[in-house]
Image (cartoon, rainbow, N blue to C red; front, top):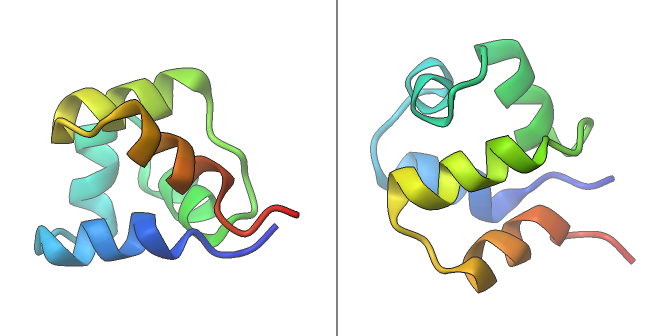
Length: 70
């Protein structure tokens, strides 16, 4: 898996650190970090929480979720 740059860019654009972003997505910081690095897929709940918390479209979430996969 590759880094999820769009997820990281969203976090930076919102001026949030990983701990704050994790809290808003309802996961711990370590889990969030692994998801952002592309080392963990993230659960359906994570992606749904991200979508709802930041008012993202399903397409935006899909692009973040599958970014870098071949």
